[in-house]
Amino acid sequence: MYDVLVVETSNLAILTDYFTGRYTAYLDYIQYADEPVTDKKRFVLEVMEKLDPLVSQIESELLSIYVDKYRTHKPFTSYTNNVAQQAVINSLNKKLNKLVKNIKRPQITFKCKPTGLLSDNVIATREAI
Image 1 (cartoon, one colour):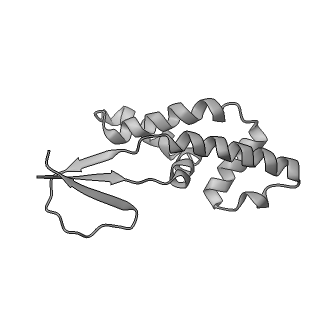
Image 2: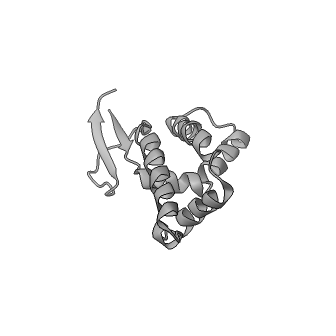
């Protein structure tokens, strides 16, 4: 019997990992570690594939706001001086969230005895494989 965990990663967590460089660091690491292709690797590659084209078009000043926001967890309102700038950020946030929302979350399969003890951010389903 195998338990299948579907890791429910929030849009905020994905964007935080993306803008803080965790996904890039992970891909750099597994390149040297010769890790086989896993659901996690596929997931990270899909995140990068979806977000890189949009993020590459963001002007550097706005990109630095996003990087700082996700590192410090300050609200976007602390970065904006005017309504026009806030409108640009709101529009970009909608685009980023729409892209991230459509990314399939990874499934991690492992062999264990079910304990019933799970953290709040994990949803488990039991399936015989």
